[in-house]
Length: 257
Image (tube, rainbow, N blue to C red):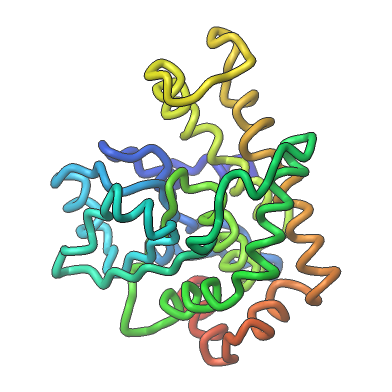
């Protein structure tokens, strides 16, 4: 699994972003693998220079789903919103009524994050259904979806896509937690700029400590358990929120080789 997770094709190290990753190459429960170049997950794209944009276009990106709040995209517009080669869609997964203060410190970070993710899964179903519907549309190939850090809202959509593809729970969880390896530099830059604070001395901060606080595997493990317990699993959940059998099959056909 480690080789799949850290495959050389996994992370697209492009200027202007930190966490653009291809969901290809993961082993499914029936022994097949997810296809490279079908779905890309990403963090904010507002700082991508022209060269990075062109690289993604050359890579095959033709559809971009922006999962951010309206105020986020107004403040930092997606560079692909006006690219003629790309179909740009905005699907606000959290909802504009969301405020950080709605989720006070609930103790351990996995508890706090799970509470947010559970809220999205249970109450933001139309937005998730629309995002998946765009990615399932055969007229919109080369799907890339993103939020700001590329780990929370993007992580939920990734879990649903990987689950529909038949990727095991352990892999889905590890793909979620992998964001720590690529966001640590962004985090250190934000600390240095005074945009964030930390109780841990900077010299002691590693990608592992970042993972423990911001994308602990247990948060995604609990999301997957919640999907099983309340909805009967990922496929059942996607049907409950309105995905059709044809849409689910199109995702699988495009995504699994």
